Image (cartoon, rainbow, N blue to C red; front, top):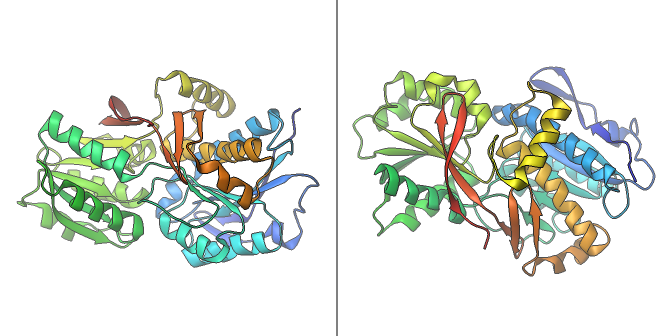
Length: 385
C-alpha cells in the first residue's frame, strides 16, 4: 500500500538563511491528516549547522516516500513536520514541546546537536519517542530516547588508534565548539588515551558560530601536537579548515574529525582539505551491498546535483527507518512499549548491521581521507558487535 508523502514546514524560509516562525501545524494551517503517524523532523536550516540542512531534508523526504510506499509505520501513513534545529536550543525545544503537548506529533526524529537534544528531552522526555540521529558523546537515560549515531568508543578512539598505526600521529590537540558533545568527547579522548601510545596534549573550545580562528591557530604553531582532533560543526569547520590551510599548517599537522563530511569539504574548497581524515558510519560512495540501494534511489530521486548523501543526511533517513523498526516490533510508537526493544535488538540498514545495546546502537565505522572535494575510504575501524 502506497501513501502520498506529507512534508509540513514548521518554519517557512523568508530571507535565507533566516527563518520566520510560521507554525503552520500549530496554527491549524496544516491540520493533521487522519490516521497519520506524525513525526517532528528536527533538522538545522540556519546557523553554523545549516550547511547540513538541504541533505537532511532530502533524506527525510526520501525516507518518508520509502516508508509510505511500504505501508507507512504500523500500517499508517507518515507525515513529517519539519522543525528548524538551527535556532537556540530552548527555542527549538519550546516548539517541539508545543507539538507534543497538543498531540500534533507522535514522535521526534532527526539530526541536531546534543545541546538541542538536551533541551528537548528536558521539556518532553518520556512523553514521545525520540530517535536522535547524530553522533553523540555517550548515553542519555531519558525514557524513549534512542541514540542512533556513532559515539567515541566506536568512532573517535578507533580512528585515533588507526592514525597512530598508519600515519604515526600520536599527540593530539583538540579544537571544538563549546557545548556538550565536543567537551565530553574531548575529555573522553583525553582519559581514554592516557597511558597509551597516543595522548591529548591540549583542548581548546570556541563558541558555536566562530568565524575567526587566528588565536587558535597561533596556539597550534610550534605546539607539542602532531595532529588536531576537530570537534567543530558545520560552517565553523569550514572557516577553521580554510584558515588552517592559509596558515600553512596542512603539511605539518594532520586533522581528524568525527563530524567533517562531504559538504564541509565542498564548502572549504579543495585547497583546505589536504591531510584531513574523517571517521563515520557512512560516506557518499560507500560501496557496501547495504548502502548501494539507498544511494541509487537518492540520486535517481534528486539528481546528480543533489546534496551529498553523507553521514549527516543518511542519519536522518536512518532515524525515520528506526521508528518503523519500533512500529513493526511494538505495533505502534508508544514509549512504554518501545522500552522493551532494547535487549540486543538488531536490524539491517544502509549502514549495515545495527545492533542495540540499551538505547545505544553499535554499527560499522570507517575512516576516510579527503581527496580534494571527496573522501576515499581507507579502512573499516569498528564493527557492530
